[in-house]
Length: 467
Ligand SMILES: *Cc1c(COP(=O)(O)O)cnc(C)c1O
Image (cartoon, rainbow, N blue to C red; front, side, top):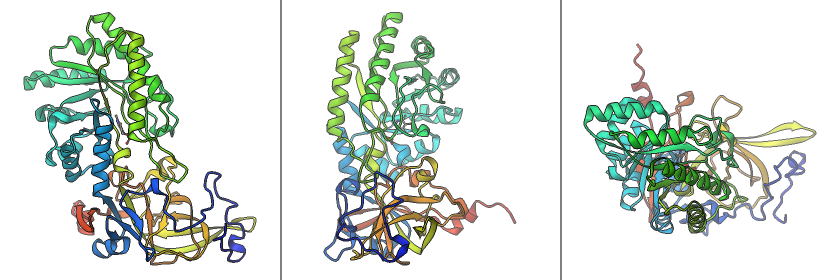
């Protein structure tokens, strides 16, 4: 409270319309450690610095806005996940962020890589990813995508429908090959997360239902197919999940299914994947578990359930996406305008408009995702003011950070940094309003490497076949 600065009626009570979880910071310049990549700090002069480069110097070199990946943080996070899970396999979910360099890092760090389209597969292969450690997902893979996966020799195709079983059999006959498959099942788990990122309750598009019996039918059919080599069962319950309760229920139901399959066929399936969705800190109040805690928790759950069903512990795998790339990435923006907007009963909300928005991070608009932000080019000696960081698009919902305390003196030309922006930002980016997509740069020891360059107006116009 001591730093609080009251500048007239407009923010007479800075916290009145703050959400309950958002507490007034004691020091508006302070960085909350778990939000930022490990090599991010504030310099003595007060500037935000990522892996030895200040935010301002990054923008001087590559322009604004930009996604910045702390390369050592990314790689050591990937390594830490692999090491924490020991003999379990860890597949990085490429949809969270993928480019050829990331595929190379993932390959070099010994993880597997999940793709869910022909495009992601092409990037993974171009990046040198070992095909044997690629998993191919998707609820509606085309013939071309399946053919590309089979031709590349991917280690596993996660089958999502009975039509896909037929499609794969036909393609395998055509290519004279056998597909390595897992069966994606829905466990009926209601994950405690946003509806659009929960994937295991019954009424959604993914997988075969265990409850309805479709999962067992698909397993038996695949087991008897001469064209398929059935490796095991796959479950993914959703994303941004903080507790292991949902995984416990998923493990119990999938292992029960494996026990039923054993009863029906005499064969014990050797592999089980529990999916990804491990939550990360987007705001100060988020307290994610460490990979070591998760590994220990999941391991004891699986061992316990296997004992209960009289099964061997299968070869286990998990698929973290955001937990690896999310915290490593920071989005940097430049402030264009600042305005106070009357919101009734003498209250105002401060809107800070930056040079990006829903085209470079759709998550707040898509599922009300929360983010945080800090002033990046300097420390401020003014107090915190509740602010909303918004983009430049023609939508009222074009919000990047719905609620955050930022210094009172934020002005045009200042830089704003949004942490935990490494996952599902660039990978979900669009060209809405014909805004070119920002570049992704990696920074390590003060050196900037471009992973994806900035799109240009020429790139956009190159697609336009008109006059
Ligand atoms: C999206 C997805 C993941 C990764 O989710 P995160 O929240 O990024 O960890 C893993 N597995 C499957 C099948 C997915 O669809």
